[in-house]
Length: 181
Image 1 (cartoon, rainbow, N blue to C red):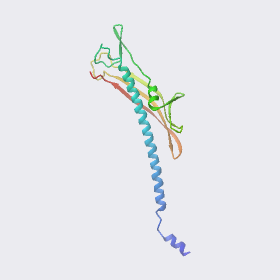
Image 2 (image 1 turned 90 degrees about the vertical axis):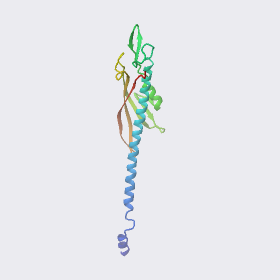
Image 3 (image 1 turned 120 degrees about the vertical axis):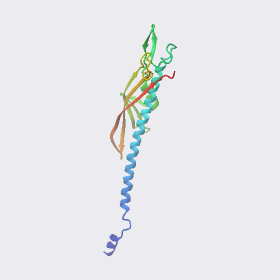
Image 4 (image 1 turned 30 degrees about the horizontal axis):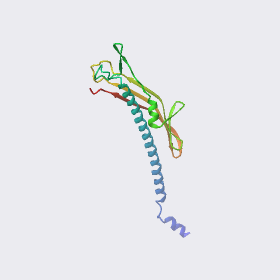
């Protein structure tokens, strides 16, 4: 009985359970932060790829700008029978995204998979709004071709081995072209 009382009074090793609790708490916190950073990186990568695809679309529209008819004009117009007609090209943004992000088209969704076959993210519901510059405008601020784009993004979230509700967000990007001359 005296050994038992001595073992209870002995304070060596009393912080051992506290150290385990603090270590486990830090591991859980680190896992949460790393999952949050993964979501941020995926969202930023998709936004950058959509931005690049929209910029390419704006550049595709610029080929209709200089016909030697109107130097320094940034709208997408074509000369037609003595007049000018609007000529907008929406391009193939989904095709560019598929190539940039290695996406596969599955029943209306464009999906990226990890190496082990799990879904990394998916995008859908692309909408592009091209705003042509006003024809022969003297206002240099409003004299630019603008492309606004929105796309839905869904990224599955897992924490502690469990699948949580996915992160869904609308990614909005805008690109414009202003002539230099």
